[in-house]
Image (cartoon, rainbow, N blue to C red; front, side, top):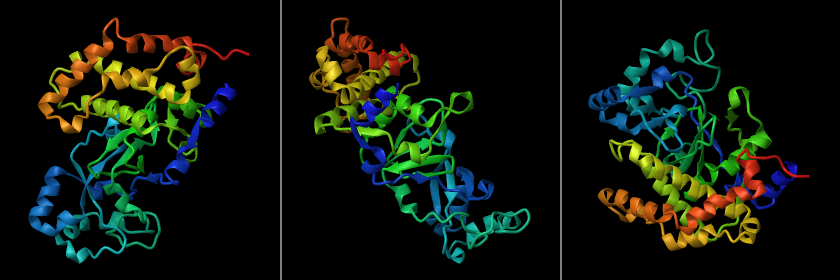
Length: 333
């Protein structure tokens, strides 16, 4: 087991180095009841005073961060950060006043002691602008890999972490069973089989060397899965399940090739070559109407009984590292 962990470590650069240590924690308000509001309250505050829009931010909790994509519940964060001039936001001030006793820092029944005003967010979120960039979001506790792409600038609660990045292909990598196996062996699972997303372990996840083409194909398939996991894609989810499951298997195969290229190539398993032939489409260049038909066309070709890709994916379990990672065997001596 240890030799495989070390082998994966040596296959690339640690994620912490790759992102220059930019792992960030979600916002701890000290009292979500006061600072997190629903759409109706948000609209009322804006109607009362338009300045409210400046401090109302779209908000996600840990439970809203799903595998591949975020599924918001239309919640909004009153983001009154340190140094905020609350007088500029009269509607917000009136809303927060009803919670003032609970919001007082360092008093019985209030929030933790600190050099912040009662109407301000509890923690000093010096990196707040990072929330508005493209990022990978993930909950602090998860059973299986749960990493989502966010390009809508959501602010996250303190049950989330995030990595600001424009590398969307990382989502394919981080959601793979290979990375889950690696992380589970260096961080260990807690009661119930869950994993804690601690940055000291997350930074050790290896990022393999990948060519621009390899990154592009991983990103295209990740985009397909992000789109297919949108509840609004179709009212009938069942017909999409085989496609979604197969695309996940396909991405996982590409991740295996990134880490275990010599093992796969020795068995003539070249998944990236087949992926290039199938050429997953760039969904950003397609209309919503055309996306499903193009993905279904690609799925039909890739899943055909005679498709080389399907045979290669089936053959992956002949490799000992893959069997170990997927729980099928123990390493040989």
